[in-house]
Image (tube, rainbow, N blue to C red; front, side, top):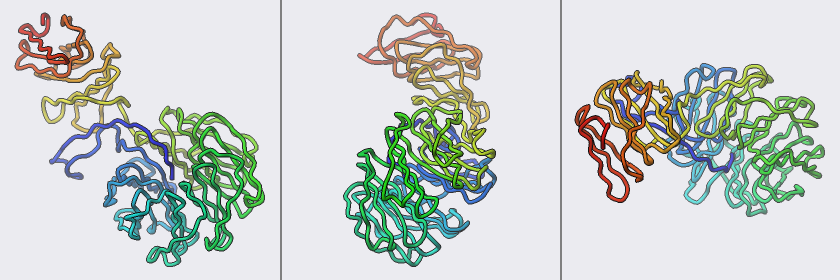
Length: 434
């Protein structure tokens, strides 16, 4: 549904002996680190999220556990929509998928060789629309067995589509584009949005009252089906999504510093809620006035059970920095290092990684351990050593101002580190002298 690009960090491990998974699976962040672009809530405990690299996540226990589903694609997925607990669609780059078993299995619909979709919406079990790049609109009347193109009359990317019944709907997108149909998409009419800003999301409570949001804090409201839109800029944030649970209660989420806004008076005023994260937020969906989820950058998942008074993170991340090197001394104990002095450690060989205090903000490029206690890290002008498993790290004088890229020890005393400009350093006393 959204078109925002966000950088993310990940750590993957190979674990062939894991009973419930095979191959590579996410360890940090957990349950995964791909940005999530949309979420659809099916009940207080059941939700489906979709995002980068064909990611589809599913929970049936309120988010205590999220399971990666096989989407059969590595393409970007922007939007997910369900008509009942079993039947749903996911839209993305050169992709339109359908599931009939609650999101466990997905199959491709429509030849998408030349079509990319950003949003999909169904007015009932059979009648739906998918919109996307270059003003693309496709329509189905038989639950997705057949899809036919419709003429949107615009060339801008359409980022979101919403219908209040099988005839009346809106689509919004780039350059302030808003189009409306009153005959199921046979004809689309351009509406004056009063802005040229990218619009990412649209939501209507009925055929008259609706909202649209976009970049630069753009909030548009209408009470006459879009004949007139009133524009206001609430902030400098890039608003990504708007969702209402009733005539008065709604939320907006933004891409900067985890912004959440809530209204309880139909959008006359908006108050911030604490998200507990600085990560960009991309989509919001509620099951009822109390139970809702938000997803976003780095695989961020937030849940509330009290109308947003409290939001709880449902993903774990020991660090959000780029990780550059990882080492394990056995099946369970390992370290990873990265940017801004990041060092994380696990002793369970699983998703529980703990951030250690490196004492530096320099970038760390390589890590090596010879036993459970003794290890070294090399990085930007720096070598660090620990003799207690990383509880404390001590900087070692190395006599070079070069960026060090790799470190390796064959014993607790003898090791080498290499870096830029062909530098090679050797120690035979554990790094006291290089």
